[in-house]
Length: 59
Image (cartoon, rainbow, N blue to C red; front, side):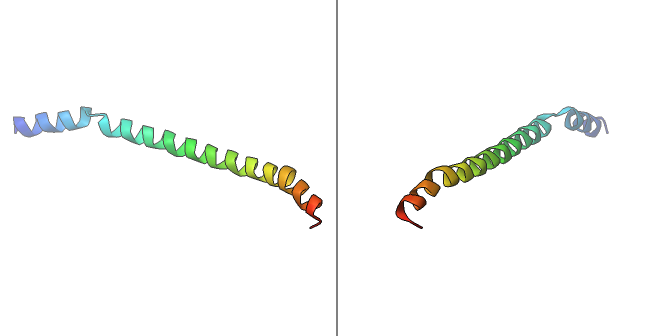
């Protein structure tokens, strides 16, 4: 019974999984921020640059 108890205590003290989850959440948050930034930059580029090109071509 002592061996089982020591294994359970070791399992409860292990924080490796929690650290991996935290890094996963940070990566997910950063990817969302990057996706939003690219979307905003794409809209601005589309309006500014390609709008002028369309006007010059006469579309």
